[in-house]
Image 1 (cartoon, rainbow, N blue to C red):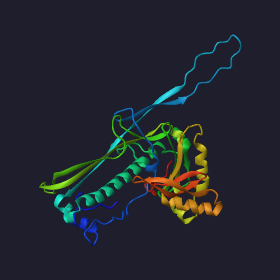
Image 2 (image 1 turned 30 degrees about the vertical axis):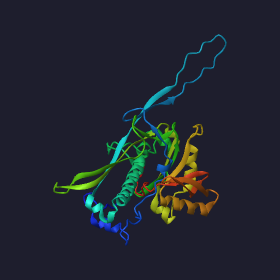
Image 3 (image 1 turned 90 degrees about the vertical axis):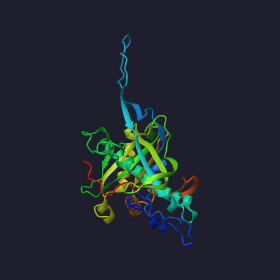
Image 4 (image 1 turned 120 degrees about the horizontal axis):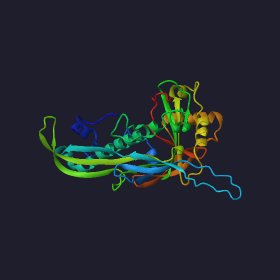
Length: 341
């Protein structure tokens, strides 16, 4: 990802590139903006811990007894285990030279323009963490989906029952995810007693420091997102992994996406009430999915109008569906995944 300015500071060049010919702040085309629709679908609930959330999960059910007359029956109980998920803190700051920001009297407009880019960057990092966050390698993050569904062998992990091998053997693989969102299955969490979502504070005019630790006056902003992922019922998540991207694009020995997605739908339980399911894939996979559907049966996919909230405004957007299940775009899903074994 490209960055603005040097050492995190906004330069005169940045301001010049954001100015229209008449001196007003131009509409910035966010060319690096990704589409991570998983953030639109994910429900959020307050955790029951200051650092995350702990839940009891049923891991076994007892057998009943076939009894005859005058025969007693021993009491039974289910088996339970506790699952604990931690939250992480995603944070950023902005410091703009006060004199620089006030050029042409557009300080507020320019700070708003900067804020949109910073928030978009945090959204992209959040979407990446939802998929690939791994506390074993990055202790400051939370565990995303990939570490939880990181094997195709049930001898290694029980979740492997919901990991489908797409056949790729190289290092240019990708995945499709099927997730059922609800309070009883999978959802986002924020610490007990905190506030959900991205928090922002206008710190006003402060003393900032240059590379030589000399002070200058700057207009400062602060953003923080306390967030985590709780997977209470792993059966409600399916990963189709090892999809070879180069074979897919070349349409040579390509994975059959339609069959793989049908298999994924067969893995999830039907008994979970109110779980909202959606597929998540990157743009390359969605493109080839449409091509494969045209080559076989156009009835597998459909495009419908859906209402979405963007900036507080409800708009109608086209939505791709596979056998009635929405297929969302997540640019944070890599095309360079190693083979899952």
